Length: 431
Image 1 (tube, rainbow, N blue to C red):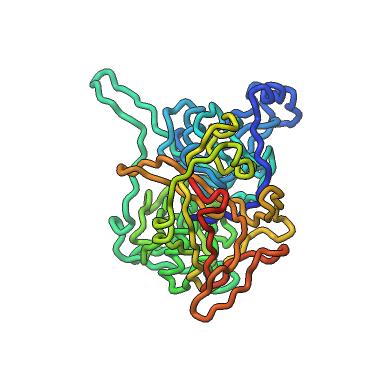
Image 2 (cartoon, one colour):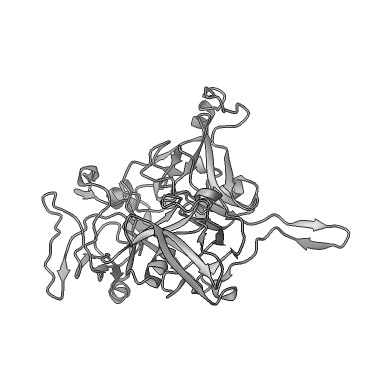
């Protein structure tokens, strides 16, 4: 289960006809505008080679970024195929290859995998977003095969695989510098008796920040920073591509791309790993047993699912089928307990919550839960997500008192020690 704090907005889908009417030449009024580029052209920036980088899209004469909200393999595959590759190896998040341009064109991408370009997917609308420049979406595309005819050896441009940092270093010290308090700052690293240096910001995200704060004895990570906000631009870069699961005890247990005197992908001088640590943090934990024991299959007609369709809770085929056709739903209950030490609250202010008249509730978060089903070989077969219909304290333990209730436009959240329950008979509580 994952949580995303983004405002619900109506998704739009642009058609090829609309794109032709919005040609770059007719909108080419800026100095750096290139009339030879078609509106919707994409490119990769900040990568080590042409197979990887942040995705940027050309619209109305301006190159702009794509936000990583809901960005996954489906969107990455479309981007890579548009660029001439056979598909994507991975989708990247958190400005792995540097910050986005000042203009961010697309947010909350939602593709079905059948589109031939990103602008034919659903998204919030051109230029409509609630993202920072540190939330760039990127891709790692499958490299094209090249052949050396003289030796008949097939070679590829595959980059060096990641390996644990402990393979190249046994003794590592870390510290935070440049922050306003001892709980925040750029991450400085020292291997053995070498000089102190900083970590590249490529791939640096909340999981890596969690491990860094834990290693420093500073409890939880409030946010990950991959910019020069805390300074350090003139310090040597000593490690790049750090990648953690979040449960490691030290950054030495995490994977990395390179260590030593190295090149940082992205904006180089400006992409520096930093953290903000905190002593109190919410921690949401799903009750897996209740999920498994409550699951069942149900068939419903499209006519009975009109409210769910308004909230994008069905697969793409449902939107073109007859009203008397059926959809098969895997329904289940989710009980999400806050086992942390702080309340979980929606990020967006209450005034920005969106009222859904069909279900008669406010959405305080666009995506509260994300579900996936994998086969026995680890391949993802189905996925689904659900907005926060209502975040409230349904059950509390250990002396905790319920603070949040949705009735009468009440405050939404999950108190520490309390559980929010979505029962399997609620709309959109399915895959």
